[in-house]
Image (cartoon, rainbow, N blue to C red):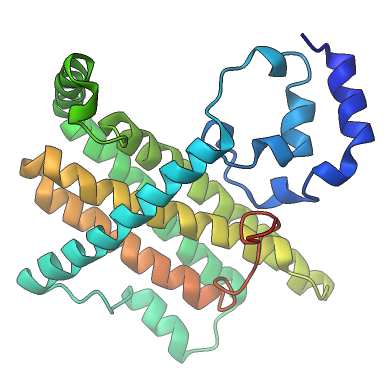
Length: 264
């Protein structure tokens, strides 16, 4: 078994193995990250216990997030159909955001609107789990029993995975948007040219919300009585995503080291 000193020496002697700065643009969910083996910060934070940890292999995590991406496509189709049925305009953003487009508004004011929306979504998530949490646990337990009896009867994305995705990104994306604001305000106040951390943080938040949409869309299948409340959450997320894109026009073009580099 390697000691802490062994890991530190490994990091020092294999700098080219790690992707420079990758930890600046991640969602801090190491257990689900396909790049832990190329992150120097991950290695440094775990020099004592890294050898004994039992985390999924990077390729397993990559497969997991690909499946979530496939689910997101189905969720967007579902959202489109339900919003059309209930006459909800998904192209619309909040009245405040529309107002911001037509007036000269300080960047900090627009950012406040964005983080207020993000915090509002976080509160909606808390309220949803207060309302349906017990029902969700019962469904989770039922599916756990089925999977123990017949492991091949249920897909690899489990209900607890969906719950963890929603709960993790509800908070983490809010934190990332707060960081994006602070970094962007710093760039504005100091006339710095680079706003990479701001845009990168906003992209991490956006990806988190998109993954959350996929998870919410799947939960409708398991708790159909929560359809209307889940639809409200999906609409909130879609409008939140549009506001991120409005405030950070280059968010989709920004490339995070490793994550957005196929040959990273």
